Amino acid sequence: MASREPFRGDVPSFISPDDHQNRKPIILVAGLSSMAMNAQRFIEDAIAEIRRDVQGRAIIGLSGGVDSSVCAMLAHRALGDRLVPVYVDSGLMRQSESERIEQLFQGIGLVRVDAQERFLDALKGVTDPERKRKIVGETFIRVFEEEARKIGGNSLIQGTIYPDRIESEGGIKSHHNVGGLPSSMEFEHLIEPLRDLYKDEVREVARALGLPQEISERMPYPGPGLSVRIVGEVTGEKLEVVRKANAIVEEEVMRFEPWQAFAALLGKATGVKGDNRVYGWVVAVRAVTSRDAMTADVMELPWEVLRSVSSRITGEIPTVARVVYDVTPKPPGTIEFE
Image (cartoon, rainbow, N blue to C red; front, top):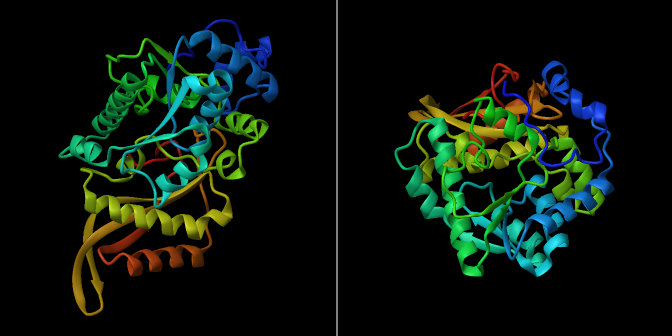
């Protein structure tokens, strides 16, 4: 695992000196943080940091997840009209998600950019998971650069959190906003106010900021979106299948309060529908519990729930022939499939 990077600047005031020195061993041994969190003090410090680091106007990548949403609200308080929140509609989002995000954040001047064809074209023929992540990361950056040019901005603000950096630097997988970033960017400043927080700590800040529960308790969703829930090449057909399957899984499983619950598309297999042989998609269902995404346990869902999920997916999506349930914890498996 990668070594812990030093904090940039002074140790944040909400971390005691002992916590700062012991953070790496705690991660390695227990997978938990003993950070003594003072959310209100963190908010004040983060706003001051953003004001100090941003000269002129800035872009923030807003996906609607709790990390980027917290970051956007901190940056909005710090910069006001000097901030332009940008939501990139990559075509890799869940069902009806783009419309909901646009509705939630219209009050802070959210700009929605339709880049669906651009992402799909960039991913055409790509099967390697790391290449997919890097392509998605670079495409996001190029869109942000184009939007920044329109407003004369030279700073990019991101909702990167500590586990993103650990997994990217440790070679586990390239997060689109860390290891997936291109080597060359037009931005002069990359600002990451949440870089030393875990997900549960970000949620504390979200609550302190008064964000709606729909955001503060939102289930984690990968930056590369559905592209890492498709094993192999990403196509429009596969996206539609996995998007519908994800919606079914969430409808059936969310009442059990998973850390994450979703569907992934694995490939094809033989099945029978009616009296006919079919060669259709195999959908894997995954539901896990976790606190910080560094480790995860498989949820022991009731059998009747799994049967209902399988019946709905194969019944409501004609091209799906088989549904399987992933019982692999993390480690050895990552939470997402790619």
